[in-house]
Amino acid sequence: MPRLALVLGKALSAGVRALPQAAMVYILAWALGVRINWRVPALAGVALTVLLGAAAFSTLSLIAACIVKTRERFMGIGQALTMPLFFASNAVYPISIMPSWLKAFAQINPLTYEVDAMRALMVAGGRSLYGIGLDLAVLVATTVALLGVASRLYPNLAR
Image (cartoon, rainbow, N blue to C red; front, side, top):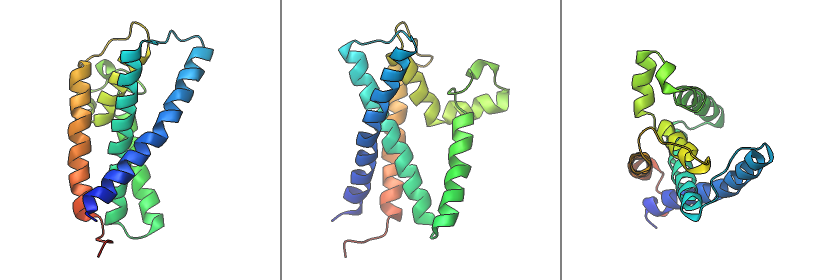
């Protein structure tokens, strides 16, 4: 079996597992009084964004796991990757108030584009800073690139 198939299967399973979590976010946001965009194209866009984002970041995690060989190191590396990506995106605060050096990092951070798409699609009247097309293109490109790297690093278990 090709390593790409194994890596792709892991990425897709992470994406599918993330969909019920997104549904819970919808329910919680609705319960808190957030005006939700319930149109079918927006829901489909959210599902695609969640699937791509989860696939990309689970593949990044798989790459880290392939590089380090012990669980303890992997957990540390995972946190060292995740936290800067989270705080250097627009998930917590707007890019417009970031210092210039952090803005530059946020512009290349795929999580920035995932959050931008999610806000634009989920919230009624939401707007995308970059455009949904660019957001999805960045997520697709990131996922494809990470899948390529992970499939090269993933141990050849099929032999």
